[in-house]
Image (cartoon, rainbow, N blue to C red; front, side):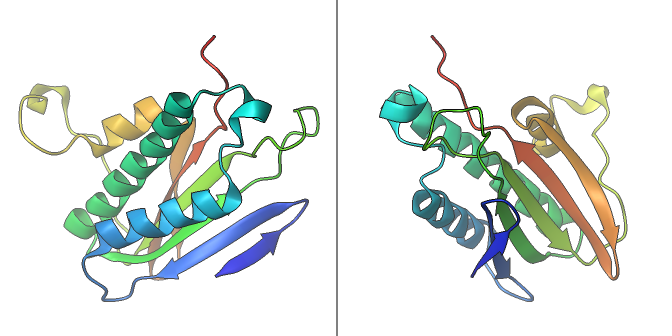
Length: 160
């Protein structure tokens, strides 16, 4: 479902109460929204190569996978995925996409915690480290009946 957000932004929501398998479903939902929105924008406007555009999309999908997996493994499951596309910067070239905010809701009030550095060699437990590296920012918003873990990704700029 698309919902307008102020000043040219857009929102899509996916309810996942009791739905399985959530990770693949959330990735597909996110990929579909990014394609519909044209994020991060056409190469001739953004200056991004096809490889840079694909890498930016894959980074977002990896972050979605990590956040959804964390909710499934540590917070009793995902209840909702919310994607928000912010309005484009008015100073950017026309056609350039805005920044993304992704929210993963769950039914647990327990806040996520980074795994101690001494456990780096163990499998799993690296989702928040990935989020620290790839997201511009991330955090947790408590809400009635649980919380939402959110992250923001800036529209990419060309490497050159």
